[in-house]
Length: 162
Image 1: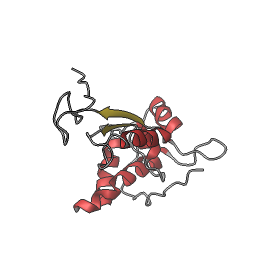
Image 2: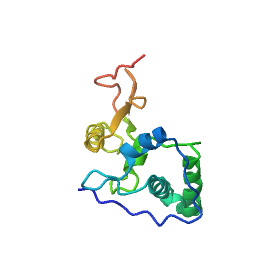
Image 3: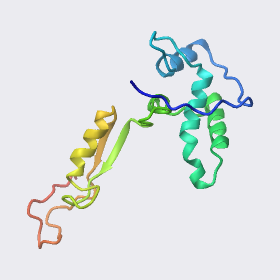
Image 4: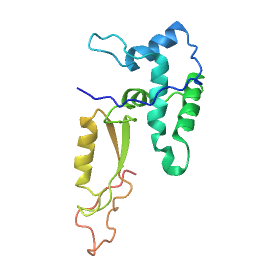
């Protein structure tokens, strides 16, 4: 069972949302929190507050007011000027808080001392896939064929994609 993180109460100043019936169905079916009976336990307006408050929580670190940023983000969503991706809707307010579906992971030319080394490139994608995410691997940091390292020459050259 996934525990939900409760957003702060929705301010009274937050305006209503005007959607067509079809837009309401598209947004509410996959993204509204549902009870054990499968029926929504939150409204679309509450979802449009949960997502921006969760995303804006970190804004205080940069001297911004998280509540103001959340309200501005919510207004963008309500006006349909900006809607985040599906994982943001489903992940915001959950303990995992995975707000994106795809991750590009760097692989540095290192066998284990660096966090982005080759052996971590086995572990990190597995952990991401375990939570439903997808991976891309950036191979641009790998040493090309015959490039010097701490040894005079590479023992097994990496082939370039070009």
